[in-house]
Length: 185
Image (tube, rainbow, N blue to C red; front, side, top):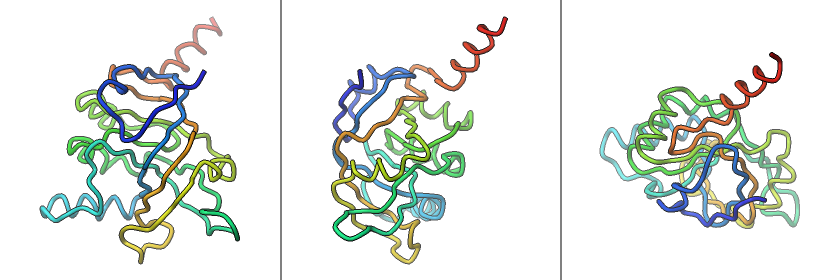
């Protein structure tokens, strides 16, 4: 059964989450991809204000498609998380508590997740139309000139994801590989 989680992420919730847990996210998340991450980290390095307070927040790696009539957003599937890996450890060190995307993370990101008590969640690729139904509001809040890569603030209701990397060092992808190897022996 999926755990219903309220955002922003709190310490007690992060302690309970384990790699492999299914979750339903509720509340505010931010959307940003590589170009926005580059700008956010650049702002951090120059001690400039960020487009939102990252403390305790979750970033969803997603490139939305235009909203059809009567909808808040178009297809909203996850993008490959590894493209954000050069920036993610710095953001986690500054208070980011969750990231959502698809694919594996670098060792540097996994180390930051464990050290600073954050979590990486996977959304299922190819389900963008279904995921979009969980997004109740969407607004561009920064870097509008980046188009689909602009920073957005979204409000989600029962957004489905799976914990891949937890604060305890759990790694669903590694555990899956190990289990697969054991079955084949």
